Length: 61
Image 1 (cartoon, rainbow, N blue to C red):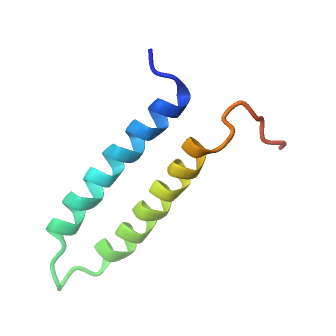
Image 2: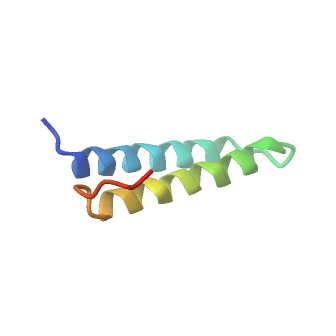
């Protein structure tokens, strides 16, 4: 069973692979893919931060 840090790292890796696939499919006439790519890269950054932070600390709501 994976711990939380390993799971988040695996998710980040999988998202990066998808970003590469999305970039390969991008055509000059595509208008929505670049925006989607920015959002995907932002999501990857958030996952990377979560994987690198103190995972035991609860965030106050």
